[in-house]
Structure formats: C-alpha cells, structure tokens
Image 1 (tube, rainbow, N blue to C red):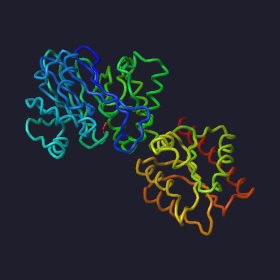
Image 2: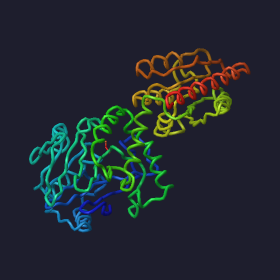
Image 3: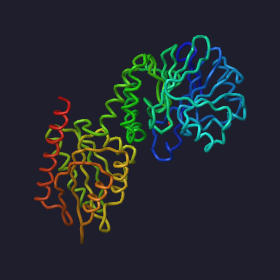
Length: 412
Ligand code: FEO
C-alpha cells in the first residue's frame, strides 16, 4: 500500500491486487487497484477501505504517517458500498480504533451488522445529507442504488469538487503508485485503463446499466472536478472523459454497441470449426471487424467483454448429448444474466445422430429475455458441405449488413 495526495486535504491510499479471481470469479491478469481515501478538515474521514490491508497495525500506521494523520484523528469511516473489497477491512480496523462513527446508507447499515456485527456508532444518511468536517470541508452524500449493490452511495467533497465514486467509474488494471492520476499518464496508459474499464464494466457493472444511467443523470448537477473511484486511476485532469465512457458503456447494454461482430465458437472434433474461418471472412468482407473466441479456451471475462462491445454475435456451436455444447451454454447463460440484450445474431453448428443444441439455445435465450434478433440457423450433420459453407457465409454477410445498418441508423 502507498499514499499519494490527490489534492489539498485529500489523500489516496491504494493497493494493487493480482493473485485473486475478482469476486471469486473473474480473471484479472492485469491486476486491479483497491483505492481508499482520507479526507481532512478539522476532523478526518476515511472513505472506503482497502481489502488488501494485512491487518497488521504497523502497516496502517505507516500509511497514516505518510499522510500526517494519526489513528486517533480518524473520526469517521464512510462506507459508500458494502461489498467486502471495500468494507472488509472494517473488522480489523475496529480492533485498532473503536471510537469512530460509520457513515453509510440505511440499507448498508443492515449489512454492517450481518457482515461484521457492527451496530453501534453508525449514522445512516440519504441523498442530500452532509457531514461537516470543519475548515470549510463539507461532504455531501448521494445514493446511487445498484451501482453496484442496492445500498451504494457516493460521497462528494464540496471543497475540492472530488467525487468518491466507489465502483462507479472504476476499472481493472494495476495502477503505478508513481502515476495514479490521468494527468501523470501517457495517452497509451490511459487507453490501457479505458480497455480495462470496458472489461470491468462488462463483468461487474453491465447488469446494472440502467441504474448506472440514472446515477450519471443524478450526478450531472454536481461541479465534479476530480473523480476518485474505488478501482483504477483518479481522473483529475479530465473527469468528463470517464463519465462519457461510462455513459457510452451503459448504452451498449441495450444495444447497439460498436459496429463489430463477436464470433464465439467451440468444437469437439473440428466439424463446427470448419465453418469458423468462412463466416469470419464473410463478415469482414462487408467491412465489419470481428473478435473471435474459442470456448472454453478463452476465459469468460474476456468473452463477456467482447460480446458487450459488439452489436452482432455469431455462435459456432455443435450439439452435445442432445443439448448445447456445455462451455457455450455456460457463456450464453452468463451473457443473458449480464443483461446484454438486443444483439443481432446467427448460429451454426454440427450434429451427429441428433440435433438438440438449437432447441436448448432458443429456450435459454427466451428464458433470459435477451431479445436477440436471430438469422435462421444453419445446422449440418457431421462436416459442413460446400453448400453449407456457402449458406453460412451468406448469413455472415447478411449479419454484417444488418449490424452496419443498425449502428449507423442509431448513431444518425
Ligand atoms: Fe468494488 Fe461492488 O465492489
């Protein structure tokens, strides 16, 4: 963990984590930063916590020393969001210092007791409430439910214009503690975080895109000069850049997204695979780029990111034991649960003695209310014939044209 000064009276305390599956589920090959902030007036507050704190008192004392804050100066702990990547440090912290007030929403208060047995010294707040730290530093609170849990709020420092946004405006990607700010990064580095933001959004936030749009509207009225999220870099030079990115991503959830097609395929013995290159070539011949992933080789967090960014999707999937090829069934189930709706789509695939994959796919996408517009599927027994490949290629071109028309009509 290391501290840096965000602006006068506001410090960032952060740790990079890479040896976990985020939420016990998602790969983070580039790591992720867990950010916490200390805000100083006459009184001091810690906003959110760092899950990577080892619980060793000296580690924390060293961090506080760097910010010229003593443990006994911490009067408030502000819990914007109860997910344990932010709140998990509360228990060990309370063993070091018991005399502070937790500030959180009413819904978070209920979880504080369930998760950590904390019931005393809790002050619940709602939108519009404020906390005066003295020296002209007043913190204001705004609830942003379901970004990413129902109890979530943001904290806004009226003195510096800093928005402590927790998961909102966050990203994957480890952050160099020498350059945790957008004004200290090259364009190349910022683009890296924007790509990691897209994968973070697709994996963590996508299912809550409507609440995210609502949250962005709510925050529109604030004079936000700095965005300090719980994950990723601090946007101090151009906070509007990350707001624009989140607004765009929230729109992708209901489509259209980019004028691109994601091709996901799986194959047991190479029969379905024979049609992958022809369909990719056909789509690209219409000027539409593709992102191609084989399952289960490509990990789900990357496939989800790709589908989220694309307006069109092709599934190359054989029948397996009268049903969908299992890795494809898993990924389609997750796509639906992440509420990636309204895509243009096409499926092809091989079968042996019997089909069945298409029936299960239709049932699954209906049950998940995905509202994808499908071209007629092409199924073939064993390997595809020349005629099958011609038909699959024609579907690929048709899909590409449909995506082009949709995206360019919507974007005017
Ligand atoms: Fe970073 Fe929803 O927790």
